[in-house]
Length: 149
Length: 149
DNA sequence: CCTATATGGTTGCGATGTTAATTAATTCGC
DNA sequence: GCGAATTAATTAACATCGCAACCATATAGG
Image 1 (cartoon, rainbow over the protein chains, first blue to last red):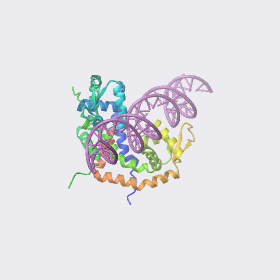
Image 2 (tube, rainbow over the protein chains, first blue to last red):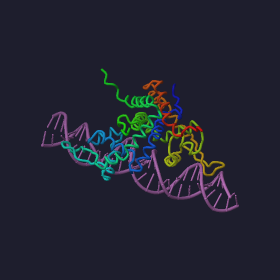
Image 3 (cartoon, chains in turn yellow, green, blue, purple):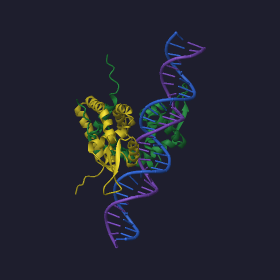
């Protein structure tokens, strides 16, 4: 009857929260100077990296739920960081794009953000860093059973 | 000039969010039946595992910020899951304890929670699971520089 | 065509995350 | 002792999370 709960000190959910907190703290502190939240930064990053795209695509890439993203987009649009235009053939959809101002914000934070990323990588060591990403991917992926048969 | 931002698809913060989401989804679904949130469950678990303790201690062990915990405790107290009593010598503090009803809720979910934990462990393999926890701990710990010199 | 169903987004609601300010009680330093 | 700095916890304010319900449009079938 293996119904023993794992000790909270070795609990995967809690460990994930703590790690995220440790990684994000310096980023949040950096973004505060630009008046951005961590989620808004993720949206900018995705639009910059992958180009104009639908709301649903951004939600997937930035790991945001649609309801959250919907509200975040209104804020970002008001701030002039992004544009929202109607899809040409499907009027349900809208295409999101980063503005020049949005690009400016990315540029203002690029150097420091890159430095933070490098610091974390250095702290863990390249090997550990890659191993961690691989393990996290493994945790995430196994939701849909493989399309075998 | 290493100022290149890491690709969002290999971004540690996003990977951590996704992994957490993957791990928590079945737990949340389980807890919904008991009318509990994930955070309330963590508080119960900590009080059950470590015994009566201060608010600050619970916050640390459950990885919750004090303002969040403060609200959560009111809810849980109203539900009769915990008690809050004044510390004997320091009147600023309060001692939290789980009630019989709180223990009941843990008991109701123990089996399924343990099964979920086992399933994740099995999916990753014991070795990967432990390695992941170790790496996450490594990410978290390195905040305070070693007390050298 | 016209209705039933599915899809892309939004809104409502209750709860938590995050920072800053606040209150109350304790401890420190002179 | 007594006021200044600390500490434990709460409150305030704003943003996001997560679920459910909801519009609007698009697609499928008859």
